[in-house]
Image 1 (cartoon, rainbow over the protein chains, first blue to last red):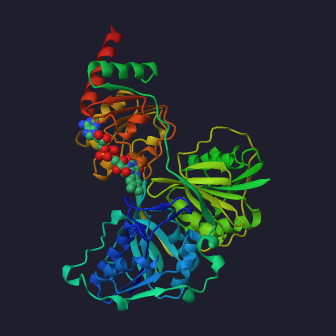
Image 2 (tube, rainbow over the protein chains, first blue to last red):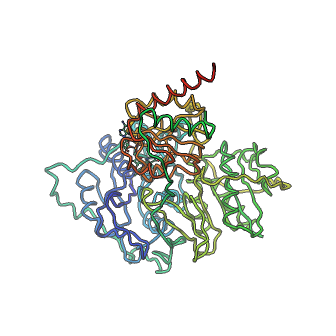
Image 3 (cartoon, rainbow over the protein chains, first blue to last red):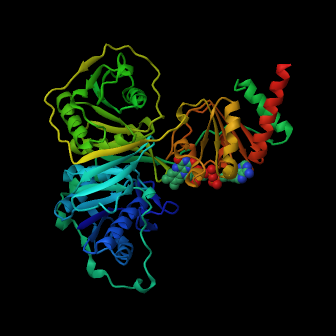
Length: 264
Length: 318
Ligand SMILES: Cc1cc2nc3c(=O)[nH]c(=O)nc-3n(C[C@H](O)[C@H](O)[C@H](O)COP(=O)(O)OP(=O)(O)OC[C@H]3O[C@@H](n4cnc5c(N)ncnc54)[C@H](O)[C@@H]3O)c2cc1C
């Protein structure tokens, strides 16, 4: 079975630089990590590979080439191959343009299923899995909180999706796109000490636009259908407030307030 | 005349109605017609409000048949030429909208929380980077514009009386199959915090005695809610979480006990009339948004306030 994991590298939310002029993330110098939900997808794929060693896993990402060391670490924990789709022309692509780039690559790749995450912690639009599914003409489900490992095969998957109102079970025919959430509990393992310096360079392919052949107008900021025109840090209206303590006087103040406003 | 299609999700009719307010803020004084797309025929609440209801009940589509639903939206657009297509940013809405946008080659903005008319024209505002930044986004290209809109943020109050036409589209072509629901366990929750007038909310500071909030909530005729800090620890249920990854609430009174007031939490507090915060640190960010700040231990506060309410009630009884 061949599994492709489509993942995104995101800035560590506690530590990123944002270019307020151009409205883009300066990814080159912020610390990056695999988006947590996407890491669950890789974790699950590795679990499947443990169960049936003939499973092969390819990780696909569209990212600046500077993610290479992070991608190499993913190969050091048992993923077979990785493809980094990277081109200066793709910088600034919105989800529409990104989905088109990824889909063009995927439409020429072989796979039995595509695994990914449900939410990304940076943009958090959740558009890309649905849009890739649309372009590849596949069924898709996100928010997967549990996958039945024993029935997972190249023809079928059974899984649960947790929403606010219910936990539903589904059955999906492969190939399909499955989006996991952290609730699934799968993890990307740490690189073992003995593998820290393992040479994996022959298992990474970097693909540029000379392979995918997009016209400049189709990708990047110009090929996007949305553009960020401003950003601001949200400010909230401060209220002029009373500060009291929990002594009886303070409690009485709260009590009178509640009574005045007719909550009591 | 502009035309707007609004997707109505089953059991979330109110979220669909609220998108009329989003539409009003987008088009303001311009005349527009509203179309509601419903999968199942329980749409009494929409009659007299939308201009047109597109009723798909004969097709017997399930809400998870996203490929089929997006193919239907695509065909409806080809016959009606909508200027805007709006989805509630519910789980399903957020999965269907991107497919429709891709089929229509158009821009989609996710999880919109505000509309602005700025120097560049219409701007759709949404949180990004885990709620640390609000981004203003414009849709470029030939449209239609597409949005998924955060539930609970816009609220429709006018009750315009429209003579609603019901249309049952014919000859729709779409594909189903490949995905089926094989079981469903409903979760039971006694109340929905989005409907509460009074919320007594607990955070990291009340982790060990969150259950003590309930008697106070009952005395004030309200319900209990929580910050993510204690939801993640399993102390409070996820469906009472307030905030960006929880719910947006609009109570008249919000009492925040041991809640620090992270941006992602505050994002869930929309039109709250009064905020009282109880915190050992009077400089916690939530305090500057509050009408009253009680500096001190939340546990002590709860018990003293409950005692005082009982005592005063007792006097009134005499
Ligand atoms: C992508 C993303 C989405 C998020 N979504 C949400 C969301 O939807 N909702 C949400 O709430 N958070 C959300 N968060 C988390 C948010 O950033 C905060 O971590 C969280 O809100 C903190 O909760 P808290 O204030 O209850 O806890 P803490 O940060 O632990 O604060 C505890 C507070 O209690 C006070 N305190 C301590 N002891 C006492 C006492 N005895 N009596 C009174 N006060 C006391 C402290 O002074 C402090 O102010 C999100 C984060 C991310 C990254």
